[in-house]
Amino acid sequence: MNIAIFGSGGVGGYFGARLQQAGEEVAFVARGAHLAAMRDAGLAIESPLGDARLQVRASDDPTELGPADVVLVATKTYQLGEVVQSIGPLLHDDSLIVPLLNGVEAAERLEAGVHRGTVAGGLCRIVAFIAAPGTIRHVGAEPSVAFGLRGGRQDERVERLAAAFRRAGVTVDTPSDIDEATWSKFLFVVGWGAVGAVSRAPLGILLHHDGTRELLRRALEEIRAVAAARGVELGGDAVDLALAAYERFPAEATTSLQRDLAEGRRSELNDWSGAVVRLGRDAGVDTPVHDFVTAALTPLDRRAGGEITFA
Image (cartoon, rainbow, N blue to C red; front, side):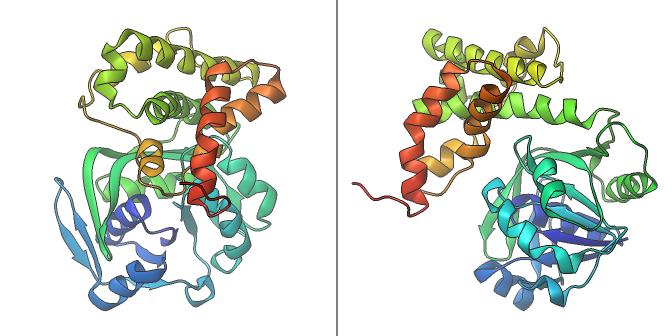
């Protein structure tokens, strides 16, 4: 398959490299020092599953890469507007577009803004990041992806992409309800992200301090209630299952939202807790924990984006 990766950081860089290793024709949209290093010395992967260095085709201009059968969108959620404006040259009428972003609104936003190809729902699980320009370091979680057309529609392109990922050694799921799968991940990540970011504490503290554990439970319950109001039933045990799953993570673990805010980088706050607030308001569901988290952290996020300044 001819596959374009829009966003070549930890997620896009890792999965794109593994697909190329498996024999797929892959092109990367990247920028800055990372792009320069990829062009000069190739893309390096450091992983417990095997290191690699690949010569890759990469550009910051999608018109140089041309149309692809599949476009995997692996940017940050706040970059989706840029994606919508720039993705056109990567598409033909039969292209499949698969977002591998956090949040639950990426597919809808792509469908609203992109006028060629077919947008699937999608998600991934991996802990990986740019360790240095041209180098992706995978440090945790079994690399996995899930994707499919919304509404449970069958599509031969989905099956072909799933087969390509399996050849690349990536765990793949093509669930009959991709919205339920996406909201399940959203609940898991955003509940933890909200409480971790506002408390600035690692997961072990969140779980074993009575106050933060109760706050975490309430944050998860709010997400489950918003999902239900939007017609996505996650099950009455979804919160308990998430709490049990957290116990299997290292006590020192944190989320990308927490790390980005702590290090003064722009974050995905608006598409994590901010989305819970926004979607909850639209559905008539109260979300007091996420209301507080969003209000408390927005000044830090706006400062990181250069919108306001303060010491």
